[in-house]
Image (cartoon, rainbow, N blue to C red; front, side):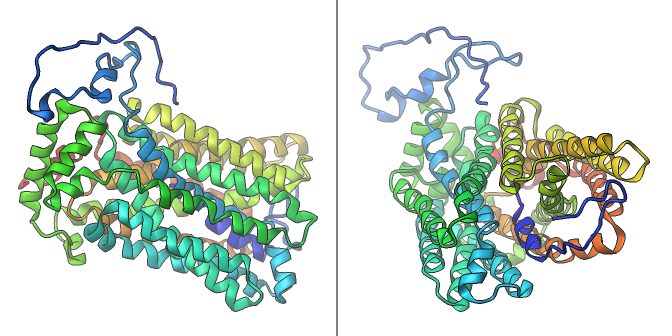
Length: 525
């Protein structure tokens, strides 16, 4: 999951007097499915069967008749297409997340001036960071909501605080109003970031689960790019921030309406006793040939897990759930302390040092790099696997950080030093977007059991928000005290530790059903 909220938070505490780099002195702030097309063999049967489950023609059956082989050859593989509209609607929630990450970056100065707290860095930071407090609570509450209500209804309920929060913020005429609005938005976002990966992992066909899961990251990137682009007029129009916050409510309206036509998780439907509804969803998204086997797997796992819908928080302390909770929490700790927020904060200032004076343009370039990495992740994740991708990602991040440290520390030509800093920054952001960002949010629900998936995801993302807040709180202070080079070196070291952790603790989930993964982690299942 892309996590760059605190880059917005720490930007409100920038100190123009700080000198971070020793030289030069820098002040700080696929769809590539290898289509080789040939027509699938369409067969028409004259036999009429009264059993609708066995003979109903289905798009998912026909389009996967010529799957891609390991080398990328084969037919016109569209097996992902039936699930795509449902996943796309869910990913709009991540667009909302990305939009809210960037929406306060530029306009916070205009907001502070109009609402009367200009120059008060603590209040400015509070307006941005109260978002994290709401997100923490939202993430913790998601597990119980999903267990009891299912993903579809939870999505629709979650649009209420998102829409209200955006409208209250846009209409704010006092500090209290903007704080309440941002808190409500954070509450809704906290639910979303947990809910979307769970939903996609449970409705996507096994073969395409990673690629479809990567849409979370892509949605977040597009939301950030949209908010940065729309924020450009705020530099000249002091009231433009209200328009931007009104616009923030639009994606939530789309999600609420779209979920009216989306399916619910077949696993949750089966656990709820709605077997016929679960069969209908599996037939529609995965194909009629998958129905009996999938339902049998769902029921087998549910029988071992227990029949009640809602799990207890204490269950994540028991094996094998505690192992997955540990992995999920650790992955998000590594993700945050590897320094993504700090690097993003400094990126615009690094660009300024080489002549890119527009901070909006620099941020947009960073956003496009992030987006390019997410597209590569979509292409690679179901080919190379989750473990290989996340290890490579953290190794790339470590190399990038050490490159910047070298450029800053050693006596080099000024232009060469600046260019190496830019190269290291771009490499780092791209490396993050290709693995550490998307894979972390994808693999945790894949490793979790059906019964505790909501609770483990809630715990993992709550860890994410706490670490996000801590990094945002202390980052500038550490840079001021020790300088950029030691801090960036620590980011590189954490990235190396994260790669080692992924090598020894992660279980590969590529090409395996969620039930198969669950049984491999729990021999008693």
